[in-house]
Length: 111
Image 1 (spheres, rainbow, N blue to C red):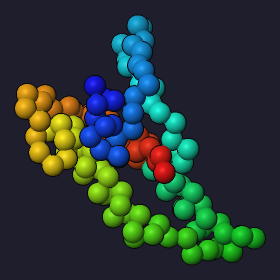
Image 2 (image 1 turned 45 degrees about the vertical axis):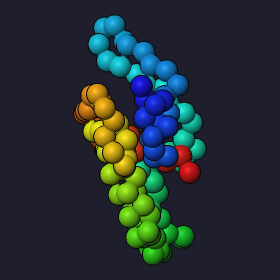
Image 3 (image 1 turned 90 degrees about the horizontal axis):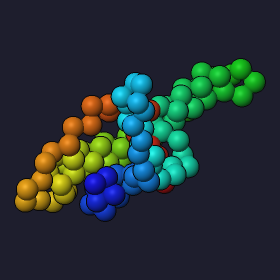
Image 4 (image 1 turned 180 degrees about the vertical axis):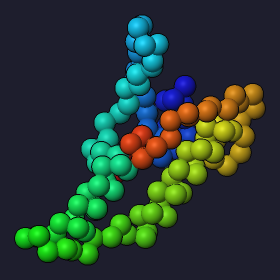
């Protein structure tokens, strides 16, 4: 199913497989490779660059506004796909998907 979601939006990462751990009853999802890590680590890189800088001198390292808007667009599009099965219109018979773990660490950066 996640592979079909990835086909509906360039912002949804494709699924390679999954597993259920017996003792904890937790799912593990194996996704396609995302070479730029995730939003959590990207935010930390900017934070560390801003307050540490070179030779201990604080640097101006702000996340570009364009990136923030692009990220917002990507999240909205991904939520539309989970809610209605597509970006432009709802798919007939679509069962909405509840993510239950949206956080910066799960926002993968593919390109």
